[in-house]
Length: 62
Image (cartoon, rainbow, N blue to C red):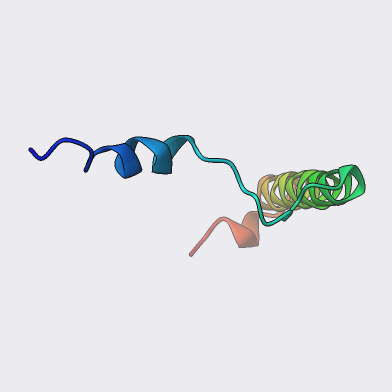
């Protein structure tokens, strides 16, 4: 291996974003809120489907 060629590979995995994307606190808060809300709504929707299948015998047959 030629000396000095692996420096860019080592730095590529440890570099941080310098373009400023997602650097504002409100952006991170908004993104986290949207993702958490989506997960909670998905779980509640799946629970409603499970309860509906248990309560209604017609839904058990596929």
